[in-house]
Amino acid sequence: MSKLQLKNIHKNYGTTAVVNDLSLELRQGELVTLLGPSGCGKTTTLRMIAGFIELTAGAIAMNGQEISGAGRTVPPEHRGMSMIFQSYAIWPNMTVAQNVGFGLDVRRTPAAQAKRRVHEMLEVVHLQHLAHRYPAELSGGQQQRVALARAMVVRPEVLLLDEPLSNLDANLREEMANEIRRLHDEFRFTTVYVTHDQSEAMTISDRIAVLNLGRLEQIDTPWNLYNRPHTPFVAGFIGRTNLVSASLRAGRITLDGLQGEVPVEQAADAAATGDARDRADARVSIRPQSLYLGEGAPVAPGALPMGPVSVVSRTYLGEYWDYVVQPLGGGETLKVHAPPSSVLEIGHQSQLSVDPRGVAVVS
Image (tube, rainbow, N blue to C red):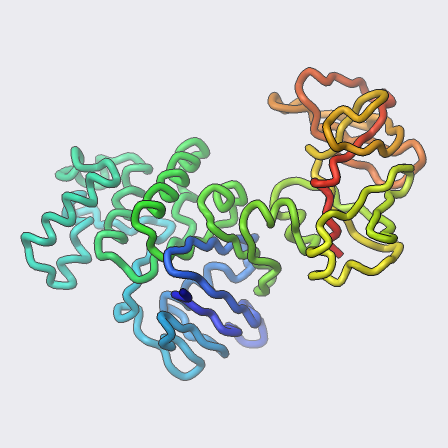
């Protein structure tokens, strides 16, 4: 069932379109992440959902009822939503328990019921032992848990999160992303999450909406976005990839300087982006971990031989070697990820193979 609908929404500041004809639909209990670079319109979209910013055009509906339109906006406090900001915005003069219970107090929840719900929520976020401490006595991760507990204890219709982990270090960010996913699985609040961090989005999301220059590039599951991107921007923004020119003919692609052909297995994506036709100027995404270097037979099940290449540069990254190789027949260079044990010197010549499952036609 549809919980939240964004219908062709626009937001202009003067002649600048910050959000341009954006349409999304969230199902009940779904967690959708708005992902994109700075300036793509993701935070503006979130604030329009919250009611902090009026739409220039279009409409937003919740449970089938319009809450935002070009001429009417339901105030934020009447939308049944909770929002978590990048700065957490917890009250420094209140204890953890008082911060978590603040929204219940505003809603005039009976004292006994509020106390019980605060106690239950603090147990859920593992902060019961810190109930009487003040924010200044907490770590960044603990403060983030307080903000999450305060937002969820009021049982919102929709939970909104605006880059809530950006102030944390890398290890704590990963831990808290897993925690947010755990809490979502437990409570199943319909959630809109904003971030520019691809790995964070992949960790927590049911679906990801990739935005670019105020427009929706693609909305899909994390797996589909990574393995079946529809546009060059999505392919390049979600993980690392090789974006190269190729010839497409009869459902098979060939790369300049290489002899092998690769079948286009993602026919649905090719049709969706208008790339099913034969042509000589297709753009193709090839993931570095879908390319293999080795002599003789293909070095991975299902990999297809492509031809000889030479190592142009290399970087050791601990978990893998990052090689750049040049086809001996010319054409564009390619990034290849190889295991730590695969040590190749610059100038070394090797046979290149490709797993077709890591190849996608994007334009």
